[in-house]
Amino acid sequence: MRVANALFFVAYLASVAVQFNDPDPLRWIAVYTAAALCCVAWDRRWGPPSAPAFVSGTALLWSAALLVAIPSDVDLGPSLTKWQMKVDGSELVREVGGLWFVAVWMAALFWRPRDK
Image (tube, rainbow, N blue to C red):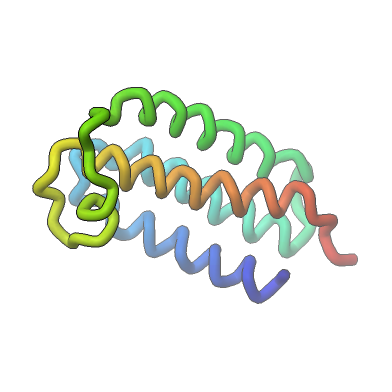
């Protein structure tokens, strides 16, 4: 679990790094930074154990809000497999995926007791 947590920490930091050229970077930097901090806090047994649950819940609610904005005719294949986002709605699909990336691991940290 500690190795996976370290890998997610690095992935969240990498996610922060690529947000600086995004049209709306601050909220994405905030969510990925919060997830990275939860990884560190879980590993070092700092802070409230409910923090990952809060971050997970926030990411899930945010993703639900984005899901309803995705056009119904968006083809998920090119949205997820092509580097360029030429299909309308591709950015929303990827943003939802990023939020689920946060939500799932934060839920795992919440439900998995910290090592002593």
